[in-house]
Length: 377
Image 1: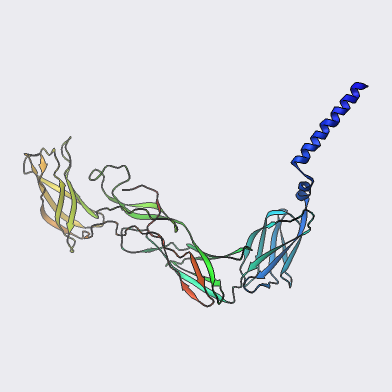
Image 2 (image 1 turned 90 degrees about the vertical axis):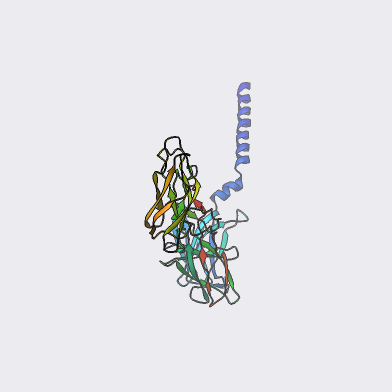
């Protein structure tokens, strides 16, 4: 009998500990909040004149399904039995007004509170508007002197924050000429829009001496490549390498020798080669003295017909650093640099203060790229 009382007493202590532990981890208020629902009113106003907007369609996601209501004359759409907590998806739509998609935090001050109101703002698209328009350019080919336009369909966005209620977004896409146009609500005193431009990844045409780590000229020859490049509108442009538009190479010597190096080819305005500038006469040329050696001309931009030779200096096993131009050819590039566009940072307008009826021209330039997939030299 005595043992039974002791066991009963111990069981009471254990159960009391269990319930006390549960209470510490999950309070009565927690339980009520987890189960509580409130009635939610969505109050829709015309932000610029603070008047109620009636006849707007308001949708929320309740228990995984869309529930829709219309705003009344007071601009209120009502929903019952909505669980409290954050992240209630709310959509507001009415023809002639901006569309709102927002996440509303249904926060209550007291777990006994039975009602919650969220205020959302819309803007008229038919009255008191202004226009933001412009052209977006880019250097997707740095081997020419032209500026390219962005791909058709590139997005431009304008945002307006409505005093913490919600943000309205306006989206335009560029046409085939890089032009875009945004019609936005405005006031006579001006509205400050925040602009956002898409980050683009395009294949860029660029001349390179080779990739990082490659042997130097003339072992590695310059070339024109198409390299995937990121154009970030808020980044800093990466360097553009200096690459010759036309170059000359001498034939390789015998094993163990070093090739002669010609560092520059001079071309006149008629596209004819008239001189070569030598850097190194090489070594290990074992042909008999006076042997004619053909110089190879390579142009990254066309031209043909050049016939240029030099000769072996047998006594020094190198080449004469002078040449005979039998024919200067035609159509060779007279510009020295293959990359004719230097490094250009992106240039954009990030904020636009615009008034009713105003047409504001806002152009943008993506520059020469902020990240290149291949590391070149």
